[in-house]
Amino acid sequence: MSGEIPWKLVALAVLAFTLVRIMTKKRLKHPPGPKGLPLLGNVFDLPKAYPEKTYAKLAKEYGDIVYLKVFGTSTIVLHSIEAARDLLDKRSSKYSDRPPMTLLVDLIGQTSSLIAIPYGDRLRKHRKWLHDGVGNKAQLESFQYIQQREVRRLLRNLSDEPEHFREHLHLYLAAVMLEITYGKRVTSLGDEIVQMAERANESSNAAGYPTTWLLDYFPSLRHIPSWMPGAGFKKEASAVRKYVEEWKNTAFEMIRADMVAGRIGPCMFSKIFSEFGGSPTREQEEEIKGLGFNVYNAGLETSRGTLLVFFLCMTRNPHVLRKAQEEIDRVVGNDRLPDFSDRESLPYVNALLEEVLRWNPGLPLPVPHRLMVHDEYRGYQLPAGSTVIANNWAITRDTRYFPDPEEFRPERYLVSEHQRSELLLPSSFVFGYGRRICPGQLLAVATVWLAVANSIALFEISKEIDDLGNEITPPAAFISGFTSQPAPFVCRIRPRSSKAADLLSTIKQL
Image (cartoon, rainbow, N blue to C red; front, side):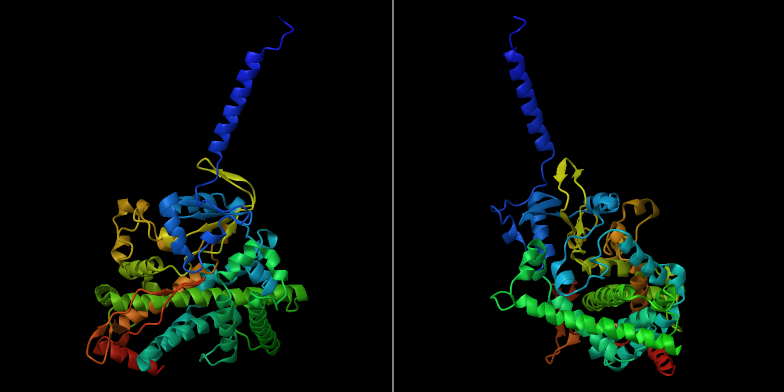
């Protein structure tokens, strides 16, 4: 008997092993998501426009973590602040890489783009440059005179030609960004460097979704001949590359010439040039060029969208504008304009800006992260190499934190002291997560805040009147893209009082 194989024990061991494997597999399964096709996976589930809304619909069916697989690449879309912070913030050492960006890097040539640089020492160097240049409080205070001078120009322009408010907002942001970044002062959108930057910016955005995700999931498509049907994206990318290179090279040579001539003021890039003794190598030149393009492009595009949303929301919600004006009259008075020293004393204005950031986040889907190693979360298996996306638009619609999310209601942030721990401020997540958070956030918020506070102080922003005397209520309509901006709309902008008109007259004399 002792030499016989205990088959019953073997059978029990096999059964136990099988059960463990089944239970383990179940415990480590992927997050839920739509069933895909063989080989192709979920390619037909990827949205062609407004991807944030399509993903949010999937979340209603599958939960706050949605899993898709396209051409063998896993994509994980996060729809709650808890999931986004647990993974992208608390586990940032695993989630700070970037997935391949074939269109941006290989075809457009943005190898030095901050958003595309892989995680590592090079990224840390770029982020340090940005932090030293625009990401710390002391440095920002040294630039406040630029912001205050340019906001006065904005107010004059809004008073003189209110119908062109879009262009005035663009000039305000371009002037601030160019002078802080390059020491270059501009007074018109017709300035050559502004024109070049806008061509590069517009063409880059136009070359985006859905071409971007298709190339990123199937990068070998970049090798197909440009004459083949469906390869028009290659010609488009070539044109974009030309505009981007023209802008980067011109801006770089402008800095070099100004430094040699001694006519450059304090700015971010004069500091970086000095770091290289004023004579960077070719490789270092490319790093500087790429950084400059990103500072201007990212800072202007998202901030312009935010200011346009502000004007749209004030037009649609006159009661909010009145409450903000009452607070400014009470705190600041009507004999001067609000400045940065007033920020902490204007809680309703600050809450209003938080609500602007929430109501339509400038980046509905922040740039994707890449999971560098295998991870597990809530019992789900998250494969290494997965593309991980936080759906900021869906998070700003989470009714647990933002009841009636389509309503514009700044009061939701004005809570008692004991409720503050439960408060979710949009500014705490709309600028990104973890080690990929936007390093220019402080500059962007300060520049937008100054324009918002001063516009509230001086202007009545209301609905335009049509030829029949009826009010025109602008719709809550937005253009799909990497950044989200309101569709064109009209509004009336005029001085709100005789005191405001007097202040404007004083500003025009400066």
